[in-house]
Image (spheres, rainbow, N blue to C red):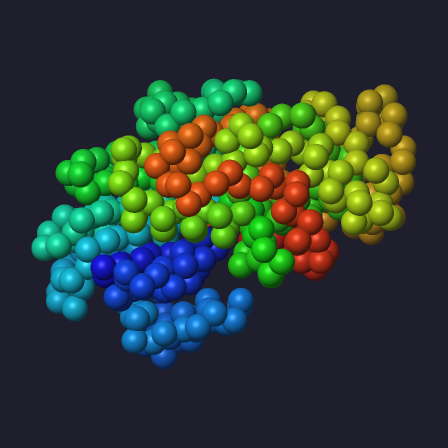
Length: 387
Ligand SMILES: NC(=O)c1ccc[n+]([C@@H]2O[C@H](COP(=O)([O-])OP(=O)(O)OC[C@H]3O[C@@H](n4cnc5c(N)ncnc54)[C@H](OP(=O)(O)O)[C@@H]3O)[C@@H](O)[C@H]2O)c1
């Protein structure tokens, strides 16, 4: 089996690449990545293996340099005859930013870029499977506090918290437009955070949000809203394993499901056990978020409810010499809090039934204990400034 993998330099793609490289059934893995030279591309690929001391097999892993933004991408890939032996494409590359300032780039990468890959894929002589790494959050923001099933999406009537989920939904529609059903495999992970092994996680992305709420300690969000989170090693194992089983469906959630979901409260308890110095977590009504923002601008009214929590105002004064730092953190945190409030849990029974080697994932409040030292080192302002 020869694989063409996009997004290998990313959080999920890196884990996919290492997982794929260990499978005997796979001969070659063409890695599509951005680089200025072949040497740079190889260094980037080697680094993916170095992080957890995995073996980099340069005969098996072949860089293919390119950019989803390149208007000639389809033609460049078609002209690359080496790729004619590809039988499986795993498309993990995407712009995953939640920030409005990147909306145009998100659309260009996740819809325009995907379509260029599809136009190449559809003329490949041996293509068997196009595995698209979608996202369970394409179900949108109107579904609240319940179990969500695969067949509820894509739904053009869904409204979205961020452009990213909108473009991922349209990505699925583009795949249906260009490829026959028998070649399509869509996986929709829930929120991928950290790693269940005691290793340095490949990316701080969602852990940044955890580190930030740990730093704030006063969080205007529903602490009991259910949260569907999985570790990246579990996600990668499920995504790769689906290629090797008899599949009864085209679309699979890769998620904690109802049996292994968590809550902000449970995660806060795990954090409090390790980080004992700051005040205990306090979860407040979402309506107080604006007052926290006003505090960070030195504009909090004297009669504001937030004054009822002097312990936290004192703590912030002491922690944030410059309150504008809190403002920057809140701006970065905003979309994450929006997702937390939705209380969505994604049914994972299809995955568990069709892939016997995949069991229930560990709950995030349990496996996060492996990442406490890492959380401590996350640069919060850097993460907020590069959403
Ligand atoms: N992380 C999650 O919680 C989560 C949950 C559900 C689904 N997903 C899906 O999983 C996939 C991977 O997400 P991730 O968390 O691994 O994201 P990530 O860490 O941001 O990685 C994104 C990857 O896409 C590549 N990419 C972005 N723009 C590109 C372009 N113009 N040309 C070529 N490559 C480009 C990046 O390359 P560079 O290194 O060059 O930037 C990187 O390799 C995405 O499809 C995402 O929608 C993620």
